[in-house]
Amino acid sequence: MGPAMIRFGSFRLDTANQCLWRGEARVALTPKAFGVLRYLVEHPGRLVTHSELLEALWPATYIEPGVLRKYILEIRRVLGDRLDTPVFIETLPKRGYQFVASVIDESAGMLSAAGTKRIVGREPALVELGGYLSKARRNERQVVFITGEAGIGKTALADEFQRRARVDAPDVRIARGQCVEGYGGTEAYYAVLEALGQLCRGSEGESVVQTLAAQAPTWLVQFPALVKREQREMLQREILGATRERMLREIGEALETITSEKPLLLVLEDLHWAHASTIDLISALARRRASGKLMLMGTYRPVDATLAEHPLEAVKQDLLVHQLCHEIALHPLEESEVAEYLAIEAEAGAVPEGLAGLIYRHTEGNPLFMVAVLEHMQTRGLIAVAQRRLSGVPRRNGLGRLRVCARALSRSLLSANCPGTQSADAQANGAVGRGTRGRSRRGSNCDGSPLRRGRRLATCHQVLAACGRDRRAAV
Image 1 (cartoon, helix red, strand yellow):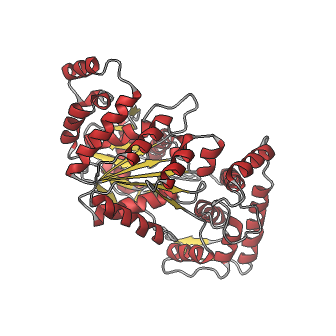
Image 2 (image 1 turned 45 degrees about the vertical axis):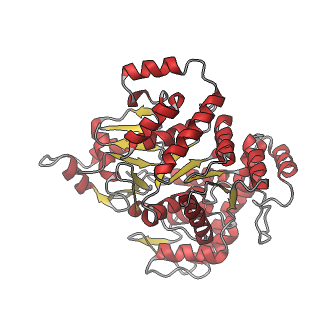
Image 3 (image 1 turned 30 degrees about the horizontal axis):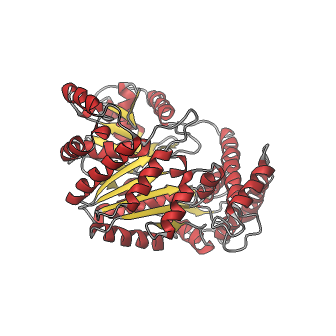
């Protein structure tokens, strides 16, 4: 029997109740589509053939393989996944599918290594994070911010650190919340509530619920499914007239009790989208004088926070001045690290000579951009991949064609100019300053400002999506 609750990205697959959740919202999915998704999630990181899926879901019944396409499309639609740039399900034409996202078994507290990809150039940051976790396990509260531009690898670093923590520190409980960009407003404490919900539904959730009932009723009432109707009505009477200040005080005390039993790693993603209440909470936790086995790790994009005049930057700077937090600023990869990544992708195959330097020059070492360009070159037939191994350039003049392709792609990115660009650039330069961390340390021949780099990345996705539409759709 598989695990009862499986997390991937911001989704949770409840196999016991046969439903899919995103945060606290249930996502509609037909039974057969759920079955397909469940099988792929329970077998991450490997090819699942059409015949294997059909045999698992329709045993002893003849079903046309084309039926799977219908359910895969439904799954992609509810996950917001794309065929050309898959985040969750990758199509391997004429063979089957592969679930490529990281998978966390919340009921057993395990992260599937098969569903993760190796990262390069981040070992010093991982070691630093490991040191902070060791301090947290010794009852020294830690607050750490991982910062960097879009696509620099903040989430990949957080995922890898969690994977290592589960192996090296099995006594640590891990909860993760995702901030979301709200166009009509954002819910107060959204990411914190998501993380707290994971703790309440985990293997030791009963003790967490009891702690919240005793010390943080304003938080427990946010999870009506976890309490009986009579208790819920009693809690609602008790919290009548509760203020945000009360909620801050209650959760601070509750987390001290929760972490007195076991260390807790609390991960909050994309804090540049967080509600101001979440930033207040981070500040309050960092300033508490009582010791605690808590490590709070948050990721965010500094330029986005600055341009939006988000309170996060000011809070972080104040905490740094008072030595109440740490910051790990991620920089673009070096050329040698790009070469290392290509070597990993090639496995036993040979990496075409000059490919690492070519990709480095045209991506400025941004990991997401690097992967996108590689996938683009592969779909154009400029690099050959056999059995998921990078084996070389198929033609004698292949490297020349790669240069032409990369230059054309780069020109498309650099020439991208949308309304308001110049004023936005001026605003970013004035707000961030000339010595911003987002600028390339190696004197790139292109403007390395975080805003321009971010705009090029966004345009890269548009260019690659357009190229992908030229391909024949295959599911």
